[in-house]
Image 1 (cartoon, rainbow, N blue to C red):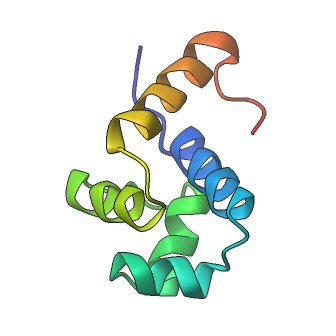
Image 2 (cartoon, rainbow, N blue to C red):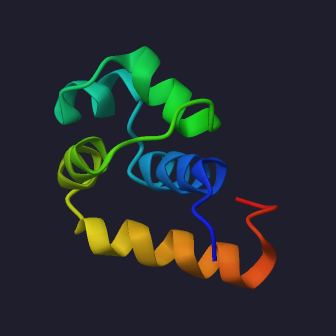
Length: 82
């Protein structure tokens, strides 16, 4: 299984939307710029572990949950759908 930043971005976007947070709010809570978050969500930028940790913390979920969701999505369908 290979890491897929597009799938990771889709998962982060889905989690953010489920919590009814804007990119502006989540990026502020995570301590990153809104444009950085937008690039991560679109798959144009791969987030490092520190950034993923900050995003997970801002969403009040463990980083392991995001990783598991990404792994499951890649394993199930290659990440074609959010």
